[in-house]
Every structure is written in C-alpha cells, then in structure tokens.
Image 1 (spheres, helix red, strand yellow):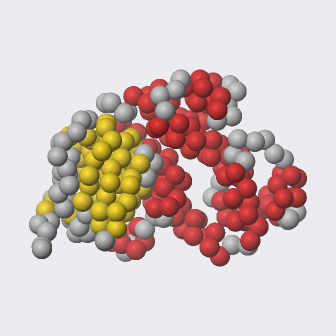
Image 2 (cartoon, helix red, strand yellow):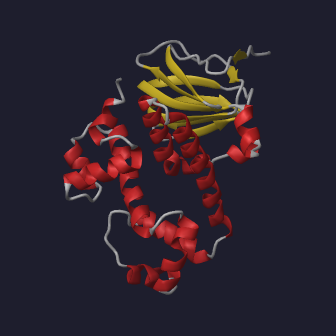
Length: 272
C-alpha cells in the first residue's frame, strides 16, 4: 500500500504553530505543539535540515526505523527524506535549521558534510540554543552570527570524529570526565587514571576536545543542568547545587555564556 508523502515548501511545517525566519541562506524555524492535535502525516522538506528538540518530544518513523526523540535530541534530514512524527509530549518545541543549496555552494559543502553525529546531540545543544537566541535578537548582525554558529557546529562535528582515530587515553579520558563530571579532580589524578603524563593531557586536550579542560567540565555541568530543566520542575537554585555550582551567580553566568539565555529566561521558552 502506497503512502502519500506531503512535500513541504522551504520554511513550511505541519506544526499548528510555527515561525520561520530567513537569515541569508539559512532558515531558522521554531515549531511547537502546545496541546494534543492529530499528527502522523508522512512528509518531506525541500532542504536538508536539522531539528533540535528544545522541550517535549515525539516518536518518529523513517527508513524503516522508529525512534523516540526527547528534549536535547538532534536529528538530520536529507532533502526530500520522508518521515512521520507522532507527538505524545506537550508542550513540544523544536528548533529547525534548513540549509539552502547556495549556502553549501559558498562553503564548498555537500550534504554528507552536514552529518552532525546524532548520538552526540548534547554536545550540539549549546549551538542550536545560541542560534535561537540570535534569531530572537534579529538585528543587522544576526545573519552573520547565525552563519558563524552553524559553521562552528559543523566544525565541532569534525572534532568529534577525531575520537575515532585518537590515542586510547583520549577516549578513556572522555569516558572518565563524563563519569565524574560533578567531581573536583586534579590533572595529576586524571593522568594517573588514564596512564599518561599530565603534560601530555595539557598539551593535547584542546586538540582532541575542542575546549580547555575547565571549559569542557563546565559544559558537562550545564548539559546536566539542561537535562534537569527539561525533565524536572525543580527550583533553579537546586539545579545549580546539583550541578556543582555552589554560587548561584556563577551558575547564571556560565549558563548564559554557554546558551545565550539566563536560566530563568531559558525555562520560560517552554511556554512562549
């Protein structure tokens, strides 16, 4: 039995509420389902695109697979790739970025160059949230800023790929840091666990992790903060404490630096 596939125009979505803004050769859309409505129509988009789940989530079918998308999930869609979305969690809000062919031509990119690792969606969260922040500012500098943020996301993907051919200690260190994200440890202690000299870690950390050790650890803490804010209605003071920020002002400052939003401002995005 054949299934009807709706081919959407660029910037068009099936969501009952959506807003699309054009920034040069990138289209940024916010789609939202505030309450339950019939969903599940098969459709496809004209441009290759990304969809980042800001709040809520959905069940998605494509390529004979069914996946559950929760807050923080990131997915890439090829141009004209059929898929179906079933929404069960409300409110559900997504950030979508469509990439025009002119953008790829200008930067010498193919669709395969846009394949950010979906399993590493958390590492891309900050970039998409900052893109949303820039879209809300929408001034004369917004288009160039969003282009820069998006190119940085693609560049970060290439840094992620370095782990596949990196020394074993790099992967061991990454796993260790993700396990002890809320623990204060010295460089000497890290070196003893992974079995390399502290100088080796210091000299090569940015090469493999794209950030300094301090920046990377703060990112891990804010990623956990985002998870708590997505799934739990707990006070922000408790979020800060659980994520290792004894000073509330420090939490607010780091959160804003990572996302572009203050924690309270970010929480309000759920219902705006």
